[in-house]
Structures are given as structure tokens and as C-alpha cells.
Image (cartoon, rainbow, N blue to C red; front, side, top):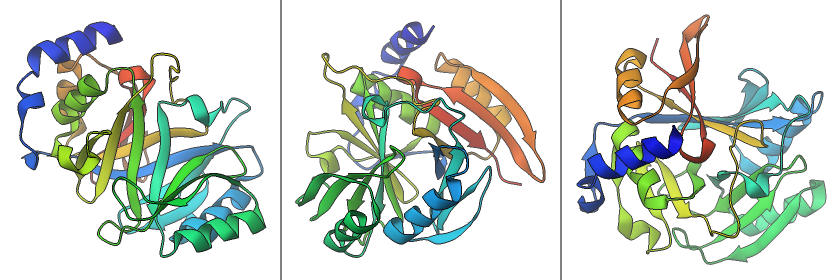
Length: 265
């Protein structure tokens, strides 16, 4: 089903791969990322997020997290199932911080892993890659042009096809120059999606039930989105009401990328 879906994408979206940088299609709005942490540790994780990643702390559901003006990072219980973030198709969320070195120094004090020391990045002058104490992976950036939640970085078995799928299903502004040939970059309002090619010898697994479980988007109409999704070769696996909020839809896209959809109240 999923391979067939990607085949149909490549056949029907050849023109999308030829779109010039800056092409804008009707787009969705990035809303959040949800990370799984052990039961009883969500408060501690939310406090770590607040201290390292900034934002406003609060109860977001189904647990505490932090809210930036362009979205939130929330926690959810891992139910004993959260897998290794290093093999996740949803590799990390990028967060803009005022001082990457200061954030790295803080992590050394309060816990966490520094996977790369502060260094020059592809899309920002200073970056560092870190892992929180519960296995969630983040990139810290100094990028004042895109504050708050900066990006979500995906590793795909076919990066070109996944780029085309995002453009077909979610719209967005394609800007290939930003990735400098290293990865594809698509802008949704003021949050980027980065898409890298997964090496053949290091396959990634579905993000569902892993530390970085899913990302979320808001669309004007879930009914219209459902038809667009089906045309791309995929189906939602769950739709449910979310009182007192808008209805929710969940799907697994290319390589098992777990995504939550909602529409405005």
C-alpha cells in the first residue's frame, strides 16, 4: 500500500520536482510535536523543555509541555513502547535558542546528551544536536529569522518522493537553496520541514510509539484534506472528536511518519 502510494506520487507529481525555489502552494500550518516519555516523568520532561528550549510552560494535553507562538512541544506517556530515537523517521525537532553554547552548558548541568558540540550549520550560523534524558532528539539553532519551533527533520527512504508527497498533501513553500543540496526544505508558515535521504545501510522506522512520536498540522477542512490524502495513496487510521477542540485525524505517511491533523474551531 505504502510503496504503491509512493509510486503513484512519482508518476503524478513529476512536475512538482521541477518547481522553482520559492514556489508556494496552498498550505497547512504546523502546530506541534509530541514526545513520549515514561509515565510519571512528563512534568520533569516539560520542565527540561522549558529550561533548555524556552517557550511558555503549560498543560497542553495529553500532558504538560511548552508553547511557542508558532506551535508547541508536548509530552505524552510512552506506555512502555517508546523506541530508540536514533532510528526514527522523525529524527528531531529544531528549536531556535538565544545562545546555543549556553543551552549546551545547561544540558551538561541538568542532564541530557550532547551529540554534537556547537558548530556551523547548514541553515543557521550555530547549531548543536542534543538528546533529552528520555531519548528525544533536538537540534538547537541560532536563527532569529525563524524563532521558536524552527523545523522538523525527517529521514526518508526516498527523499525526493517524500518532498513531493508533502507538497501534494500539505502544500508549502519549496526552497531547495536553503538546504544547500544536503536536504530538501519546505516552509509552512514559519516552520520548516527538512527531508534528508536515509542511507541504505541505516534504515529508519515509523515514528509512532518512538520518543519523537508525531508532528501536527492544521488544515481548513479535514473533509477536504481526507480526499487529498487518499489521492496521494494514504488513508487516515483514526478520526475522533476532541472536545472542546476541533476533530482530530491521525495518519502514517511515507516510511511510517506519524502525523496528527486538526482543523480550526
